[in-house]
Image (cartoon, rainbow, N blue to C red):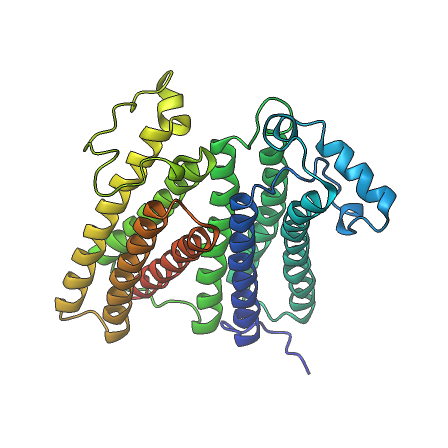
Length: 343
């Protein structure tokens, strides 16, 4: 019989939140594959309910293909594509959208059940409600992103891709953090330490670096300057300045790749310093020290994946691994920040 008093912790709620976080990770991976295969603009309409069903007849397939033929991507890049080739990219985008719908259900239905059963710790209810709203906003941002590539561009706007990915990553962090809170209970009221600020700053840096990566992906900057550590044989790219400040920040391939490289160098150095200082700190618990080492290890692996993907010309499988690495790094940085928050 369910108690009318909410416990301060709930392992079922934690497992639910961790499971949804895993689905968000899968969503990011499928989204990355959709982008790398050039599939993101294959569905030119947003139908949140009826769009869950794929084309079920030859007539329906021809109708979807005809709509795709009207956008610049087909006219300028894919003219002459046959129906079988269209189906290949259509299924990627349809799978991406279907997974988004499934995540919505996987969050909303258990949330309602847990609320009725009073299983969610009271202090976490508002956070879960906020995550439900963030998930809905993520869906809207996805269509806003796709819409940018349907009329004047042959791909989506890089800044909209960054917003779309950023919302997904923010949701992933909140799911992990809240799941850990549900598993462990409320933190004790300890004295603030510098480690809290350091860990949160590093987590913010990882998030920002992921957004820089989204700008690289959105502007297709990974397909040029495929040498390392130089860029076409130079330390500083000759075409760094774009047509204005915003173009230099978000649209110019040379500048966005350089910014992502510089961010990676800073993040790598910061992760090594964090791990060394955490390991040598006498009052940090062993779990925090191990998480600090994990942060440095995953950062190093992610840097190697980024260099490998760049120098190989970003093949799909390496691009996907690099995106998985970004989410994995965000995950361990979140766990480290959560742990030192409870000192």
